[in-house]
View (cartoon, rainbow over the protein chains, first blue to last red):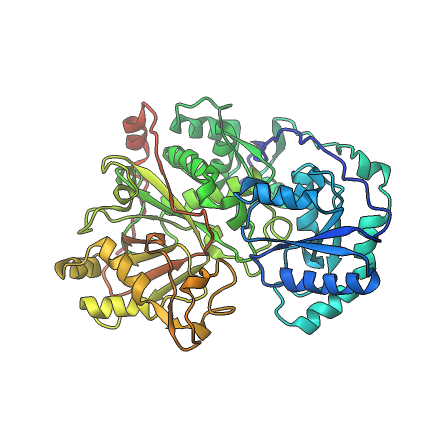
Length: 101
Length: 442
């Protein structure tokens, strides 16, 4: 067959996403509180952050660490844990997150 | 990103092979600069020595990600130029059209039907909705599923215009948060949508509920599922290996569509169980990644149900569809079984010793609550924690085999059933396309 086809585009349009920057970093870790946010849906998340915790404590003895364990495969602010999460975030200077994948 | 949005600096650790996926997700949520440290911990690793070795290797990167000052781009990201397409995106012969679509990532590996203006106009006769009506915005890129875009993808799949009402309903089902589409659609578990059709549309559209209902050969079963797959890809923007991180993949992503054989069922059909009227036509959706067929242990009720409870897969402890051929459904009904009793029986008696379940007495994915865990590894533990996650449908031809279609477990997910809305000219449309059925030489 040698017919010519004018074809339409299957790829959908999407509204532009408002882009935002990330937060300023901390200057150092001395005396700071670092949050450890572990998803609970993948088995490696918590052990990963357990190692991170160990190594950070060895390097920065005055550092405090604060855990947040999250059990859903969803965005935390879309769940019933939102208030708990926001309270936790208020108490940390920076955070490290792990999914386990 | 939720942490960053509260003004606190954060770094995300992810397996290096998921880096593109993580970056795509960050861009999709408006924060392309989120700092991600790729590490080489094997996915879902359970070996502590491996985890320790790989995390030790990236500790400097983790600290740097939280302390190194931001670049201008990280402080204020600029949107990238988006490629603009004209309405007629390409013109050539059939072979070149197919190559163009495939190379663009818009096809699924099989030849497509070229979506010309004429073909799309004909497809749009399957709905009364205007072409620019937005049925929903499909994750993850929140692409606008306009009626026209649905029709374009439907043409590509080889669908008939009479399938448009089901495709529109299918998009509505994907939009329902209970479908968990945003998670299952991209999961490493390669979940595929299973579409179950009830009501009079089954017969109007010749959707197979009998012999080989899940095999190739029926245009409705084949192209409704295929069209939904193209819609997910081209409107939702789910790309294999980028957003869709399915480890092995799933042939069900091409299509998995079945009609329930309501006429030969001794029980209420699925959509009535889901709260709809018998005369409604509906589409039911859930995501599965494990389809097996088993021979029951006997053809009496004990043999049928023993086959089920001893063969369900323990790792797939979520939504479960039991497909019974009519002969077994009638045997069970004659012995006093109803759907509810079957579901309770399966959830109670599909058990294994705790140590044979994943993780510590249960998969870490939605592990049972502490009070449900047994004390000893040898104690039997249920595979299905919620009888309400189980559904029983009647389908298939003559013969003994039973279908077990299992999915994952997560709080908040559920079976999703939506009513199909038909256009005003439905009867005429059905009449036009009803005779498109295969005739086999005998």
